[in-house]
Image 1 (tube, rainbow, N blue to C red):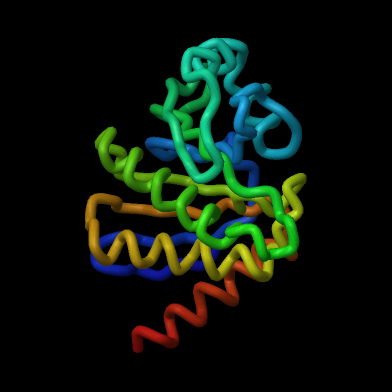
Image 2: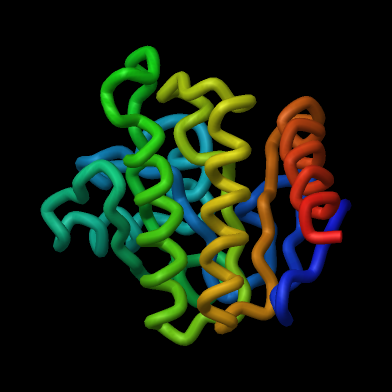
Length: 181
């Protein structure tokens, strides 16, 4: 586990299963139908139970870059925040801006709900094909920028599924650490 404190927000990078995190809110890398699916989305829906799918259905979907929040079902968190990242189309279809928006909207909605701790997966880097080496800097920079201007979070975690993904995020955290020293 690697960490860095910005203002009073602790940024943490760790490998693990996001469904096992104990924070106020976990972020689900959802599809636009909010219908559950594979990867992180499927794991969160399976762990949380069927009530989450019922809550998600009330929204009628979510646009790419948007975010909605539900209860947590069987999980040990207060909320699940569902955000839709972009499908990678080669980088020429506004994917960077949409990914940034997914993180920004998630942070803003969690803050609005009074959440003090949040856990993110690596949005869009699984089934949606976004290259993680391109997505990690966007995720980290967006979150660091947010906590610099909005000191509402005590802890912001990136919970990565694989060792290789964790290492990519660790490198980005070290770049941020060096830039602020």
